[in-house]
Image (tube, rainbow, N blue to C red; front, side, top):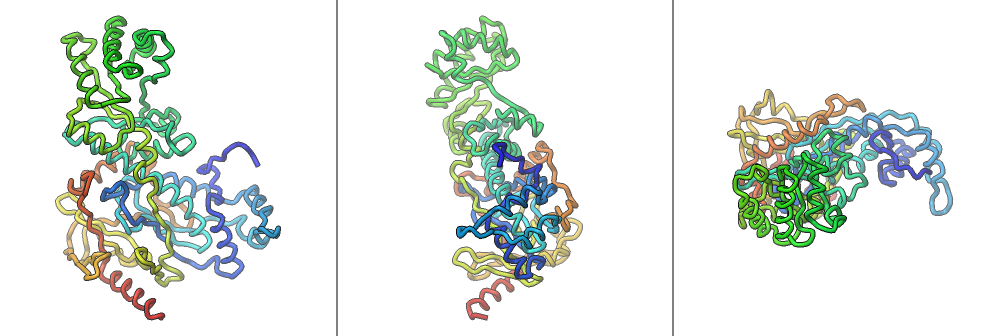
Length: 497
């Protein structure tokens, strides 16, 4: 045992799992089923934040872990000393001998980061030996659930910040409020979702993204006079002169920012408001700055808002109250995915030894078999998605439907259907990532490119789906054969066959 936390991505330890994954693996091995082949798929059942889409994230880091996946001698030694409640060895030596030199043998198709996902669609499809497929579940869902939530939240905030047509940077300021030590995954996901920069310096360095920050109230409070604090900060940071004005009295703070600027002779870059009536103080500060007239020191002063921002408050500030903010800095409600703190993505068995499997439960009946998603495009907009059997992927060829296809609404008892004609623009959502344990199509790791991909995909989503409140629901259906197979398997289960 050590007090030093391991780097999970670099170590690739398969112990990045729940205990039951290992106990099931042992049972499969001792029963001769460990090498039987199955497919499990990850999906989510409900869009977060009352929205109508999910911006997918986390794949890049999940694959980094997979590339290093192996049991070390220390891992095996730890499992050897594990005991059951009665004191007996938890893991059989034959099982430990079986796993210790094993290479990863799974194959994965996945939705690329920056793509949009919708409820009940597969976002990962994992095929391989039973014990290995389940042993990667926890790492997969940990990366996907958490990063997709934050990326989606960031995309909604960035959308709100531009609702009036003006492009305003959204900054991620959440390190001190985040759940993860170091905040790396949260910063990563927020940037993919549309954040322009982060206050998290270590993450900015690691990922090669812009860092951003001004000052804290503690700096102002270390001086007897607020104006002296502002002067000192401007002299110490001549290229970063945004001042936080609400430590004592916001109006006086703006006056002191103006006084300090004139005294130091450096341009004032911004006024940041972090408390109180954000709309009122932005308007008041703007008037006071504008009253300086043609003074070049105040020619480009930006108004910066912080303090528990989310997409709804941003929308209200900008659209309803017409607050003259130029930059939005979000922390707590961004990195904690405040109003939907858990996505609830799941990982379910879909196919076993070539045969489709279905789980039947009220509100949780799954789609059987290994699947993929066909995304239809009309007039450069996403028209709808069709979940198809993975064995039927010739339906898309050269970016177009190769034949007519009918889609049945998943949750419609009447089988509401839509027809799509051969030649329509379309593509397959899940892309090959890994084959027999080897990465065949490395996921993009450059966050600027992933952010651009996310923006491009969101631009192809109609505005009705991006409304922050009561958005239109995006259409997802089942291809005819898959729809009929699902109905048949449900009926057979009900009849006890």
